[in-house]
Image (cartoon, rainbow, N blue to C red):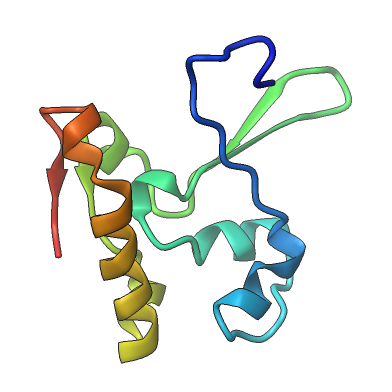
Length: 106
């Protein structure tokens, strides 16, 4: 992908192992894993079905993406450990430096 769009910073994660990094039990499905992403606006998945139709998974809806709002998923509010991961990502990602209209909620 980087060869096709070299100006885009890609980040690919193997969701089958992200539960280990976040110190969680294994995910039960792809949708379960997506629902436990740190931010609602990043908790999205797209796949092709058998007829090559795009299937969108958005367990927390699309409102935050459409409104350019970054907020924690409910799962990342369940413990101080997960909340700190979200807070660290907010600092590291610094979304407003790329998208000046984005609103970030702590």
